[in-house]
Every structure is written in structure tokens, then in C-alpha cells.
Image (cartoon, rainbow, N blue to C red):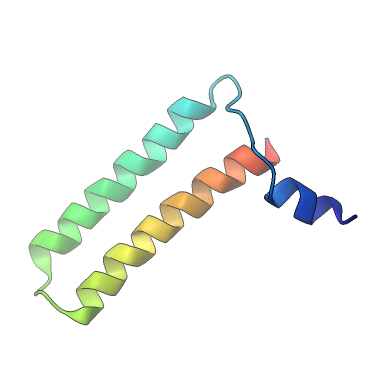
Length: 68
């Protein structure tokens, strides 16, 4: 068994202090998404930029859940 695969595919119950970190990351990501939404013309590129912000937020929160 590969420990990394096992860790990546198991449930990680939030530990003390983690929910606050998740919220802070999501709030900053949302702030950037709103900036892009209000600044950029509607386009494929804008949609991709917002999608990448969503991905970055999820991966950042996964790094906390999986590695703390």
C-alpha cells in the first residue's frame, strides 16, 4: 500500500483551527473571483480564471486537511 495514496483518498476530519483556515482561504479566493468577474469581459478566459481560483482554493484546503 502506498501511504500517499491512502492519505489522499481518506476522509480527513477537521482538526482544531482548520475550519478557520479553510474559511480564510475561501474568502480571499471569493474576493479575487469577484474582482475578475467585475473587471474582465465575459469570455472563455474569464470562466477559466474563475475555475482556476476555485481549484486553487480547493487544493489549498486539501493541503491543510491532508498534511496538518
